[in-house]
Length: 294
Length: 300
Image (cartoon, each protein chain N blue to C red):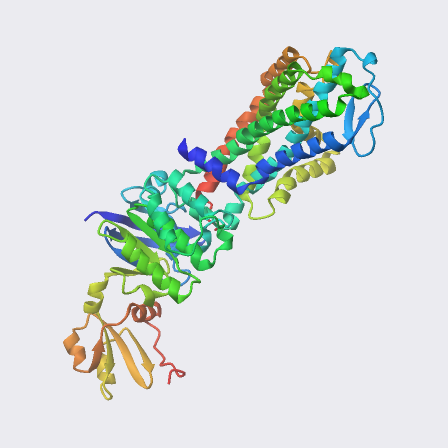
């Protein structure tokens, strides 16, 4: 498999504030990768670098092209939705379709029109007359009709209600994704996309802190709720995170054998959201069980 | 090429004032010509305004060529008015062209498509400096023809009837030839101004108009305070109106640019002056700065 995105030592600072401190990435074709991190972790900057929207230092190849010098060629291979609100408000739906058809050699106009026909969006409407959900549908219709190798989505469903968010990702999987295509997505709503991801990347303070295929997360990380009386023994196995829920302690372990943990209590595979919360909290700080939780 | 046509269409979709404004001016001219009073000046010049017609053109006092010249100047003025209005529209269009897309963040949509920054910036300049002037020339040619129709209907059977002799295709063609020669000259002259407007547009975060005014105003003010002189202001004024001094009015050398050959000679003067070519070079440099700015402008 060839790498769609290959980055070595990506760095970028705004003034004296480093935003990316040596990001290494290797994303292969046919993956759906979630780039997950708290606000200000460098998600958007990393994505802007990949899309050639910002300058940076380090090595980066996207589809074998350098986004700094070969952006024009790159944009034939790559599509992105940066945010739901970026379609120009003055444009008519028909004009938006016409425009993309006019400038993108890989745009399938019929496909976009078929997609739009299934929605309530009328071709003679201007974007400013559409609801937020409809604007996203329109944007998705345009993007899904482009035969691009890499699709980058930066908070694509921000501010949408649950129904639109759900159908957005359904459309993405059913109408777009296949083995040759790659999707890189950032979102705050980790729970909603974790079941469609093939890989997760956690980014914090400008560094990748976790880079793993979904299937190996379950092998590597285990959540344990130790039986009463086993808490201290469990702690001795060095969980990297713990919290108290309803008077019971939940612990997360990295690289411990499941049999060993199972002997101490209930084990299960942690969700990506659990892992995210755990890994974004400093390990060194003693975990104070939340008093409000109970 | 296809990209460029699409991008220019996009500009026209977004900026309806570019094509509406010349039509509105044409409509006002024709309404004034059809319903306004005809006012005749001492030298036989005439114009339209509110109120009753106040004089009669006495054909006996004017030779045919004078009458034709009067007519030519009148319809030529229509074009001038349309071009001045267009000048303002285009200036504000350029000031907004690369700012609006960042304000509404639609730049991220445009940038998600395989269009280069050179093409985008080029499309804005082509729209402002080629498409819009061409369009105004065509609208204004049509305005003049419609005016001829209105004029012949109104003047027929009045004392102005003899002015009809002024209307023949020759006068119209001459005015057209002059317009089509003058407009490209003026466009080349104003290239640096267009570049400046677009530069402010790509650079500012808001209030592009104020940012555009600030540097020249500041320079003139500082010069006035420090040196008590106004060279910058004079230079700037010349940069604005210099081209018209050369092309149209040259009182020291007899006839104004009514004769086509004479006009072309004057245009030749403009194009051999270093001023215009320095302006072109400055505009080309600005173009690359604008492209560079748009490439990495990531404040959206």
